[in-house]
Image (tube, rainbow, N blue to C red; front, side, top):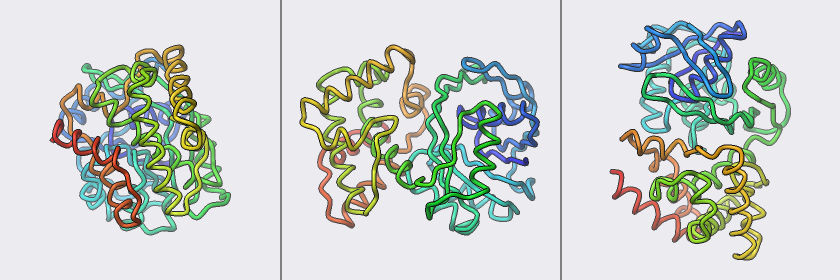
Length: 316
């Protein structure tokens, strides 16, 4: 298959390295120092996989004229402007592994609804100072049609990615899975970047766990107002937390923290990695988007709103 990957950070490198090793035609679209690093040393992946691959690297999206599947793996910041540079691209499929739920709408504006697949990424890594990427979690990448149901293209893409070494499945309810991750992610994001603690530490602390529980409940209420069903899945079992007592909900969050402690003790959310690198945060495109939807649908989100305002001041 032919893939073009916009963004060569942790997720883009993980996908690009595995797909290249599996024999697929991969083009990495990067810019600046990152593009120069890739042109010099290629994709270097360690951790759960040890791969060195040398796919084609381009630093100007206009140089790419066609591909089979475009994968957006940049931060959600300035996505509309980034996609505008690719509007000339001839392709069959487009998907985004970005955080948030605005990503599919932005893709559809450029390439049309029929070419867009939903995606929910539950794998992670860390871009190191030497340009290599450490692959830390390989849970699953979920792909599916936004309108729901099964499709041959989702099955074929999922099979190719899974066979390459990044766990991947085709999902008939991708919107539910995207939103289930989104609710858990935006409920953890502020605590992660404000405490700067390892993931297991802030999840296991009763005080921060209760803050997360309150944001989960607010965000789950927003999903309900939009008619979106949620399901228990990583990073947090949202319905179980939302429907439990405070005491039991905190216990659930702390149990997740214990799992991180046991299996991924050095794990940090990608947003916290951005803080430590001094990079911009995608809070407007994630937390801000949820708050805008909440205002439109009259859903109160006082805890998330307060955390959003503190994050915005701390990391302008």
